[in-house]
Length: 74
Image 1: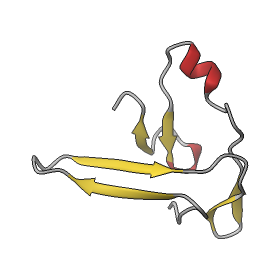
Image 2: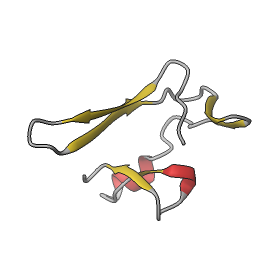
Image 3: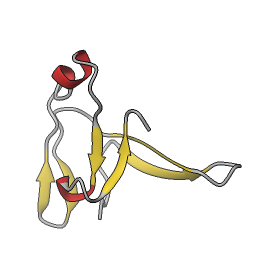
Image 4: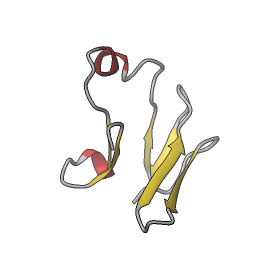
């Protein structure tokens, strides 16, 4: 489970049509607590190669593609 990020955050919104949208931000170069005892740092331009190639970027629970939270294309 994602517990949050210092200076960032994750929000789940329910739209009027019943669909759900995840909105969030995670600051670059800042250590983030993903779970108790689990910290991660996302460096600037971490996704640049994928974006420049026109590929999708996924937000995954525990880096597991079987547990997707969001993607750029969604």
